[in-house]
Length: 343
Ligand code: CO
Ligand code: CO
Image (cartoon, rainbow, N blue to C red; front, side, top):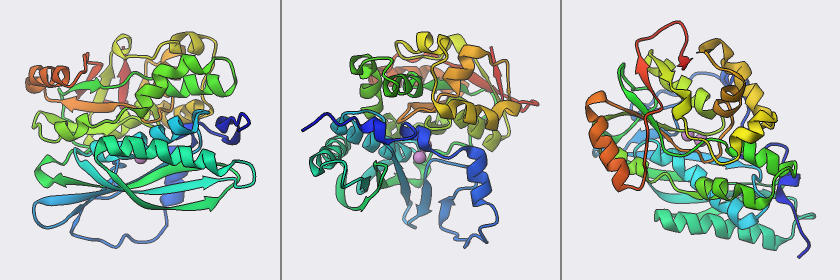
């Protein structure tokens, strides 16, 4: 099989192909009345990770869909990453995914079927780890390849975690280092080798299963995952949804290897600036490097967790037991003029 570079087919990398928040807002307005359903516990009002529907027996169904264009050249890894990313939105609600349907598009004339096969195989491997069955799917012939999953999950309603319920005084944790947008952009432009994004690939293919454990913890006040809008964008959603503000200690924010150096050379994903344009009025104290890293669109990023001050010790213990050595990256305060302040 000749060397096919999957990323050369995609205009935007991974979650970087998400439309800008401001464009999304424009698209969604004036689309007509919502058919109100008393059973809908979470809709799209608070920009949460997934829809949640009360099944009436103390449990709720979590439903979400996520797909994107190739972020790495290796089809198997691309499939793994896309699957981990799609499943993440269920974990980010405190739930457990159980069923997935695949969405696949690829240029049938230009990419052999074996490549598409490997993409799906990668997706299946990650789903198997999560205990999720890919029970079907839909494939179309498309000039730009894309792959992802529609996922169903389940959560006890008492364990449901939203992105909009953080409280003043809560401390903030992040489970994966940032930089997938910068690193994959450098890869796409052939400025770094495939080896240099190995850490990023493994992080992106890592499941956020920790979220379903956090669902059972009362000291977790709010939960989301960091994806296309960058840490800043997803944190703004947390702040604005709860009408509070956050302070970030930038030096405590974990970055992937090589990210600082690439940022210093102004290598960043196209959507970084688009994210920033949507958010600049809401953030104070950001500078060159922190702008590029905190607005960096993440693909299959980590969980962003708001933990009560009292529960911080218990949380750190639980994180350790689950293989995370986490430092606080900031905390929530009363609502101020800006959503986020950087230190
Ligand atoms: Co999400
Ligand atoms: Co999503």
